[in-house]
Image 1 (cartoon, rainbow, N blue to C red):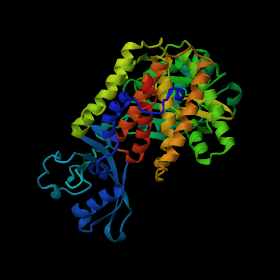
Image 2: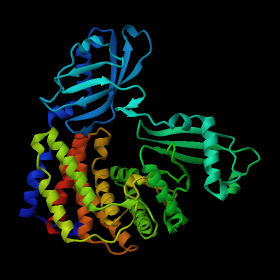
Image 3: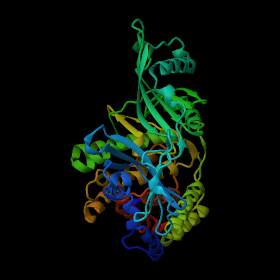
Image 4: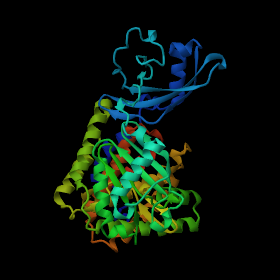
Length: 500
């Protein structure tokens, strides 16, 4: 799409950018809540246990803030130790709610009377707009802990569960017996989802390799219906041409237990992800690594085309209207919390809705739904696709647009995520152009295998995803990524969208 980018911005794009430029900088009161040194200093000077020296605050960490209507919420992890070095440090999770200036609820009476670390503890830092409270026992941000975790992480209970699930999955596993399994939790979001890798051991007399039985399986547990959606989609894909593994490898679905809920699947070879390779190649800048990226992107394009033309029955219908509605909701919630942002995205969203009404969608295809370079695994020259939780039936531009937008984000924000200062603007522009050429090669490779895709529909989805990345810096309070994401948005609005 870069071939259509004109040099100057048109009056139309200038009008759109006038509103969007209001997203250009996070206010200091918002960034202060993720400046952990400031938060730790305020807690140390004000919370009685720290101020008196009874406890020492050794560390303050934050996974991420999340936007809610009227505030942001996030889990802060405090490392504390008794004064004088007596006793071991401990981790105390607290829930932090960040309110805009003037919106902090009335300070609790007698807040200093409840001891830090107890269930009813609550303390406000008015100068930072933060309202801290004890995190509910066994919960994360007030959500119930996944009830299946005790079973899935117990080696004995998990062995029995895996054995029964795999035996019921396919005649190929009807005689499977496990001697033991070793669980390893690789991802866990309390109350939401978990991923557990199991290393399997078979009885000595069993030749598991000859039978094609795996050494490793992966269990994913979910909240809601994502697990059922992933299971249905993976079953259909496994029975389609995609499951034959010629162009791309996918995980074999080994069973779904709705009562937990748990999805069990086989392994996919992984030496690194496409995201990791793109970042390594941009950092090194060597012809070998850049050529490796080109080769794997070409294989990814062919793999996605194979998925889209597989004929699999997969997921619910998803449309551009759904995506634009999500963006409207985020922009609206942001405007409640930050009134200066009211209407900032309206002109762009109206333009996208106008284009969507005039240019009909291409026929829907089986789609990954969250197709990013992180979901492309690389191993021994081959590729694999993972994470079909958001599998859906959508026009091809949905997967294509998200992938292209994410390639730019992956490349432009790689330094920010490592805590390294952002490169000069000229360097970022050169990186953007390189990533744009990579995206064009990806699209060309895809179109060699799949039917034509409407350029305007691809533009719609890609622009929507680029806007989503910029809004995400506000929604999740990520100041380190904002400049790069705003560069993406500006180039998108003053480039391809100009000529649509």
